[in-house]
Image 1 (cartoon, helix red, strand yellow):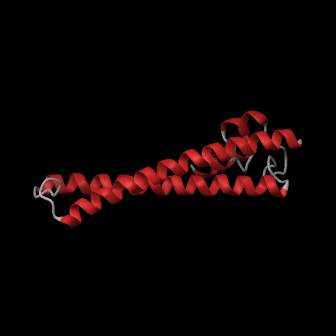
Image 2 (image 1 turned 135 degrees about the vertical axis):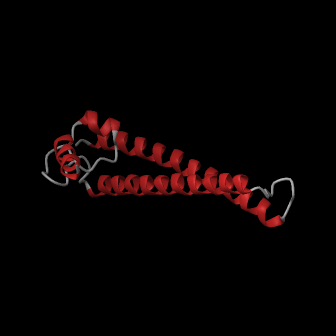
Image 3 (image 1 turned 60 degrees about the vertical axis):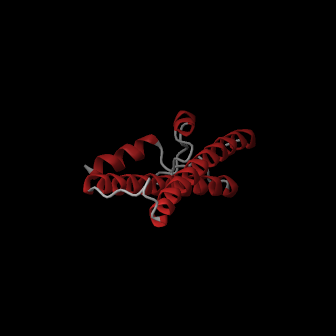
Length: 125
């Protein structure tokens, strides 16, 4: 892959990394605010009804799950950036062929070509 293409993918990955990082930070800040309100004992935000408590807990779990997925996505982006530096970006980890430009545009952190990824997903079924 040419240096200009690598720079373009690096820029795309860095943009996505910044966006997901901001989203994770926002979700974490929202969760901290909710927890601080509950800890303070303010009656306006503290719920006493069981259904309300269940809803609050469900919302906290949803934030945790989304944050966890975001952190996993950040890991994959960081790994793709490492592969750019190592000059191994764009090569399938399984078969060694080049990953198509269309796939890298759609999934810039891809480690597998479309054929190997489909084979992996079919094996899971």
